[in-house]
Image 1 (cartoon, rainbow, N blue to C red):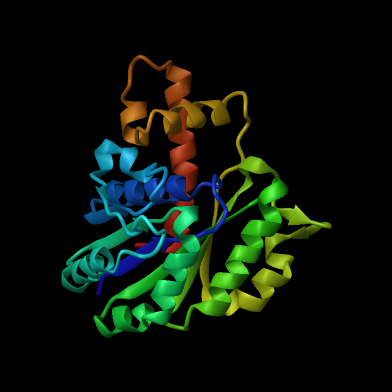
Image 2: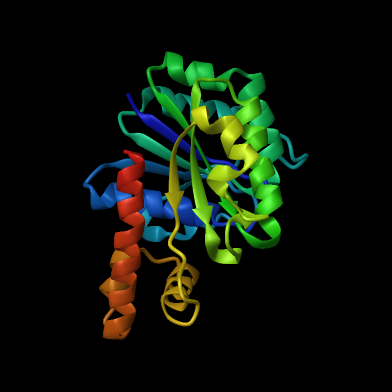
Length: 242
């Protein structure tokens, strides 16, 4: 049985590609093979990580509709896979892809193949809090029981709280708690040190291993990246994503 990890969130710039790249690196760290696919029609940030061998797949046509032929090829890949798959999806294709997956009974089909569909979604703080929490609620209400959910809490844009309530106290979580298999808490980082080091690494589209091995970086730059990797991978270990 393979796990088909799909990152879905209608809000852009909240860390979807970061989550996919971190998940792929966690697989590599554990000597597990994984197939990585980027379907983002605009940014394709995930595909920018050359070390992760990410495949590009155009799921949208010129009319901003799902390209059925290319989507069918993705399903064929899933049907014959002997390894887990990580799929990154852009915010611009969020609505049509979600509708296509549900209307074509893809979650049930993946289960019939003997695989497990895992929907990953990001919730972040600041001005995007309402949109990302709402996106989680929409996904959980629309997808059938064959799909399970992993929520990534990303505090980059601000604390994930509203009127004194943490995420676990919010209605969106309480209503969908049974569907959420795990929560990944992305570390909150000092923007002048840890945060800056991670931001530079992400801009260069390099992995933790590549950055840590880069002797052009200072010893403390690399040390901080090691600590970030350790914190993040510890979260993924606890989440049981493999």
